[in-house]
Image (tube, rainbow, N blue to C red):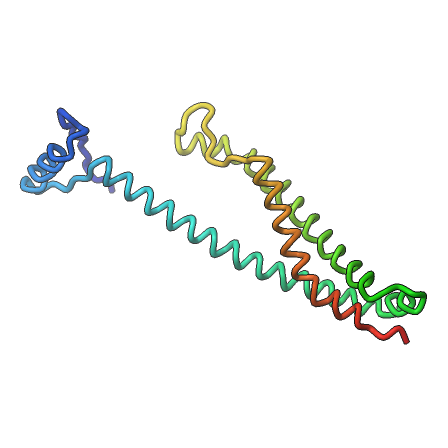
Length: 179
């Protein structure tokens, strides 16, 4: 079901008092009206809400990733108990064992970040023309934009998060008794 719509242009559209007066006349006549400013506020509110939802899902994803990395490295420590004991018996220091697992965690963060960027860039590149056509954004306008610097910072941030997640399992590995 469609709602009848009319566009009313005010002679001096930059004068808020004239816009308010026109809206008041429409309201008195029983019509509902919104100015371009009202519509812009509505769109901004929608985008702000969408950004909050994306941030919440991002935080949930990062927390799940941290638990996944911790779990993976704990299993790795348990599976390599003999090797860790052998390395320590041959003179490897606790710090070196610790660094070994921290570097493994960083590597997991790097691989996960690169995989995510490649998949996101690929899907974004494929979906941009479809989104442009559906939203009629015009030629050369993309809703999804990709910047190398942002992608690099994202991978770096994921590596730091993975490193922090790997500290606990690395500490456990470093404390293992060589015997």
